[in-house]
Image: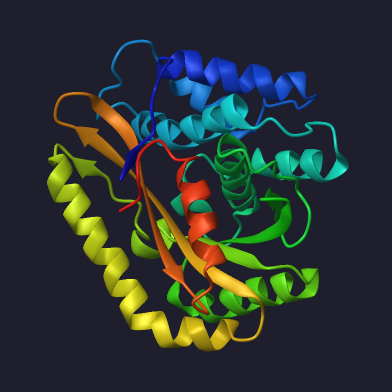
Length: 276
């Protein structure tokens, strides 16, 4: 389990992210979800009865994710592919459950987050096909990133990701964000101890991988896919520290590739703490 580390207050982080976006030439005022988050945020605690409470809490996820990106991504921030991805990332409603069918912004945000992990792990990511292109021990490695929001999307998204890797003609990995899939109502955890949260998510990921193991192997067979990585996040009110973003990562190796272990160790080094 990774608790996304906070070295700024939420208000400072919102300003940091908004300023970083504006430096890239993006207007985040008006209907941007980041503008909505900035409007409702207050330097004091937002009461649960406040009309902006839900948006304020959701800001913890989106702002900390992009804060992590801007702090850690060291690649080019001027390429057309990057700018197009960032343009998409500022879209979407302030609450993810309000844009379940149209979520280009948060889909792009996951790609940015994965690239930031890889950049922190010294793998020199670039935004090229399959989605993120890396360098590992002098070799090119690809990552296809998918954000799966329902069970009916699992097969089509995994097959599409595998096809992207095969088309790129390099070994690759599929990173799947399952946050909405496993928590479609965007429920939050309130004052639950760390070990209980850890145990519940380890079980949820284990159940998912056990149930879909043979299908994941079948859908990716012969496509050069070395592993599937599950990313998950949830907003939690910590008993002592208040609202925070917890993230969880687990790995499903494929093809018995030894090079998977090299990738796994390097990828993990981009995380704040070891995966579940």
